[in-house]
Every structure is written in structure tokens, then in C-alpha cells.
Image 1 (cartoon, rainbow, N blue to C red):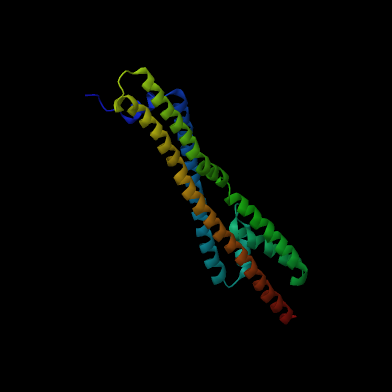
Image 2: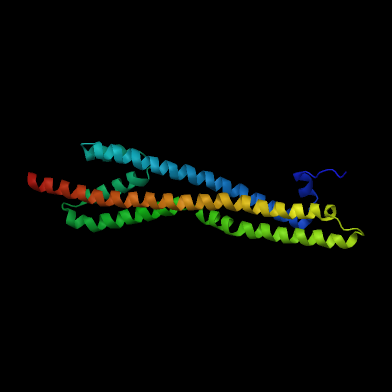
Length: 223
């Protein structure tokens, strides 16, 4: 009775081209998992920072204290950066009418840069999700071709003669899906999360203008 071939035996016994396909898919899967973890960590932290900052900002009674505390920090991003830049523009002019355009332009630039940073790595995940199944399919087709071409070398046709070749071919397909499916899931989740984060940034920017209008009206009342 013929001994069953292990997964490693099928890989080592595969043709060079199929082995190359498997190596490429393993590399793509490994790199994509690094990006998957990075995206999950980055976007989860961004969502948490939004929740914490908004909670502290809207519950604070003194906007100047928040501004001064943030100015002392060296590494700021997200809503903190939007607030600092916009508030600096607000303080530069005596009236909101003069600074509103500069505030809008500054916040648009910051949000655009934040979006670019959050989207880092998404193009790779999209590429892996799209290309990996086809790379695996190429390995599958090549493996099947090798399996059936081997039939010409045997006098008696049996399933045992083609089983190893078919198995290695299907492994290539499985590796293609192994690389593509997590990348696709992560890509869709990341896109949805980034859209939600950017909407939060834009909504906060609009709310800041309303806050500045109230501060401006208060200053006018005092005068």
C-alpha cells in the first residue's frame, strides 16, 4: 500500500515552477498579514483617540487650557492636530470672518494628509486580494499539466499516478486563497473604518467653526 504524502512532501516534490508559485504566495501572505495587523492597530488607535479627545474637549470648560496642554506635546495627530492648527488661525485674527477661509483650508490639508497616512498599505492589500488567486490558479494549471503529462510515461493508468500532481496543483490554489481572502477582508474593513474616521474629522472641523463663532460673539459682547 502506498504511503500517504504529507503536505511538506507535496511541496518538496512539486515542479520548480509550482514551488516558485508557492514561495511567492507565502511571501505575499506574510507581508499582507503584516499590513493587516498594522492597519488594525493604526485604525483602532485612531478611533480610540477620537473618542478620548472628543470626550475631553467637549467636557472642558476652558478651550485655552486644552490648547496649551496640546502645544506642549511633540507628537500630535488626528483631532488634536486639527484643533491646534485651526485655533492658531483663529487667534491670529481679530474676527472670525478674516480667519474662516484659512481655518477651512488648513483643516482640509490636515485631513487630507491624515487620510493619506491612514491609507498607507491599502494598495498592497488590494493588489494581493486581486492577484493572489490568479497566481495560485497559474500554479494549479501548471501542476495539472505536469500530472497528466506524466501519464504518458506509465503503462497502466491509475489514480495513484496523477494524485500527487493534482494534490500539489490544488495546494497552489489553496495558497492563493489563503493570501487573498484575509487581504480582501482587511481591505474592506480598513476602507470602511477610514471613511468613518475622516467623517469624524470633518464633522469636528465644522463643530469647531461653530465654537469659534460663539467665542467671537462673546468677545464682541465683552467689548
